[in-house]
Image (cartoon, rainbow, N blue to C red; front, side):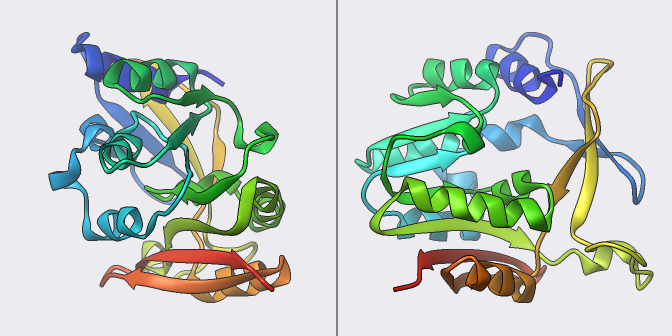
Length: 229
């Protein structure tokens, strides 16, 4: 798949005639994704993200780190952070911005290290794509957590997108997207939004306890998962 998001992040960072990043979907008109959102400093981060950063502890793995904003803030607070992203271009930008440990790799094949906190923000858990893959990913995360470690991520209930006309088949939070940037498009890919009740069911089945740490008026929430004892 073309590294469209990585290129948008690269161009914005280098002010190299940045263009508009569009997200196509199957449920409505395309949406503009502001690339500057990946470059937020601490003052521009929403309350949910601040809450997540305040709950971090020990060695941190920032999954889907993008341009490295959360990793940089955690570094500034004195944490040892590994920022992981599947985009080599985005990883290079992170390194140029000062992220000390940035890794270009797919989370599903990332092994070997143990972390006290695994963090996925900006709906990073969506990379699971669908409910079945979420179970697979949750099992994989167990292999990366140190004893007593925690997994934190945000997601949201997107019932509102359907205006009362819910899909007749499949889980309504399994969405298909396509990035477009400077006339380059990715293939269509799956992205997951999960509601709290479904998350608790799947996580419990995979051997995790779930604690909802924060929820806003738009049904976006921050969850902390810990392995069952």
